[in-house]
Length: 119
Image (cartoon, rainbow, N blue to C red; front, side, top):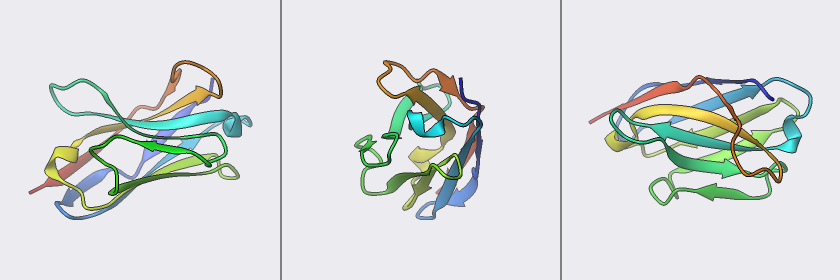
């Protein structure tokens, strides 16, 4: 399994931007598809975005499409989530996750980073 550590969360006003980072350990980072998920208080964890091992394919939840961008740097073992035009409803703990290419599930998870958007 790969170890994941998120950073970059914080408090921002509505309309602002944040960039989350997820650093992965291990030498096989490029063999993993990566994803971002979030969980707001009292709600189920939900999918936000995902990126293929090469970065050639990206996927987004409808709620963030056009505002968030997922990217990765395999040389740095890092995946990013650029979040623009933030809304109060984006407030949540954001988790980074890894899935072995071809695997069914995201099997490795980070500890999460809090994002709070004030109105």
